[in-house]
Image (tube, rainbow, N blue to C red; front, side, top):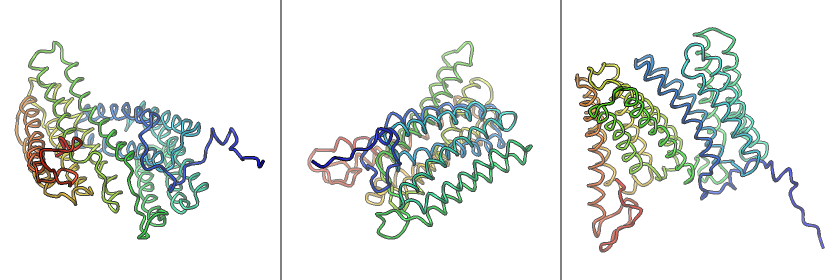
Length: 422
């Protein structure tokens, strides 16, 4: 009998990256990916506390700048898992290496700019170097991906070198090197998509279709930053001694803010596939969303810490500005969805309500309301898009109407998965 060839034990433990065209499109998010996300909870929490301590324009600028480094780290790891991930020892080794690097970033980020800059730079560079190895080896094992992986991994290698070099110079030159490194990463992404075409592309364009698992991962990351809003509310209450019923009520309002944002995002956006040509837009529009929600957590924390005092202008503007940007980001993401193109009559009223609520939320920044009044206004104005969405959904799920998936509802039957969708 002919001898059947089987992979070596080493090859079974240390597999090459999955080929792009062979990746499963119906897989579930793995426990390894969830574990990877866990370390970013700590990093984002540290960033939020830093902003809560510096609720100024400068503090917001640093928050956004550092969050982009966080986003770059998470986004690259997430995309690699979805496009080329394997279930073997190599996946665990590389993922755990990334987690250790991100943990170092989290340990130092609260002191950036300042004494923590060098440690943060080394942690970020270490993570980038791991990503360079991951993305470059995809081109080695997958020729169809090589034209894109080479410029992409090269850009990240240059970025890592610049972050390492920054530890040998003083500020502000150090931070300029960071900015250049992050900009080069963006340039590498643009070049990669200009020269690479997915094997299944019919148009010749670098259209990167999403998978249910990728959409789920982005929703999970939104939950991570929403958790920071709840943490901000709870920490704000915990720092008040003694904690009165009045103080606790203000903290609860902060938690309701997180609930409102969750409701709007997960009814309008979650588990909705973007139009193929807008995939990259869909991906990148999540950045202002998660930044705004993270800043909102810092705003809620600072607001709850002033239960009886007049709310400082910087704190009030941090609160209202972050929530307004979060709402506008959700509205922008909804424009990229395939389902919105099919049933615009369901999405438009909710989007109008979002724009109106965002404008009114910003108007609260012009008031001198205290913590309770400001948070109450946030809750009410977040409730408006929710009520609008539910009203429209009920109208279009009446017999003879279209449900959120664009299907006609017959008789008294409503699809269970459509329930609660705005």
